[in-house]
Length: 305
Image 1 (cartoon, rainbow, N blue to C red):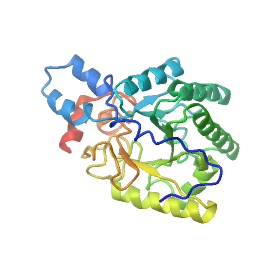
Image 2: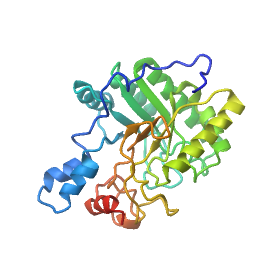
Image 3: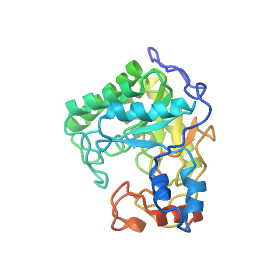
């Protein structure tokens, strides 16, 4: 189905090494449930969000990163489950939108951090979403900044290939409302997607699965015509059950989407953004910070209002 790029290293299939996806026992939703067992919203949040396999995000809040990724992947491996991790620590992260700004303090710090991230996973099976926003978020960057970011992403992919051979790495490719498929294909190629397993779409956004599938196919068509290869892709379906109203920051009226699974029109449908975690101080999350768990927002996503 997918053309193999000459010289590309491929990990063993982590889905065949495991028996389903890992449910994070320490997710933000589960932490809220532990602290609020009598809340009337708790049963719905438990069954519809906390019990659904969802990615764990890692950044400069994660402490010693190799220890953090190692512990998380180790817990998943102990149960024979496949963990999904997000690496979110690129320097000047979210540089244009700013809601999730931060990241490593320097290119050298990031290179050290991502190498340790991969080493923590080691030979155990895993899926990694590499740096959401990083390729769609270039509109306010200089060419020197873009070139530096691409070098960091190429090195990150090389670190996973060398240190985490049973990990599938998906380089994030934004969403269909951000850049044209041709432009995103160019960004992906420049950032080294030829050496990654694939690319990810719709992370933290709300666009419907069909629209992302059409976009992913168009990106692959451009990659084939320009570069001679195509790649598998995954789609974040955590909050796209009602599609998008055109806004990305805590919009009302959205709904959780298809739970994490293999297939579904892409290589995998994944819950990457945890439903109920704020996008920032905006919309239904006014007064919150990015990543903060908001139980009413979570409940609204279950109900679709």
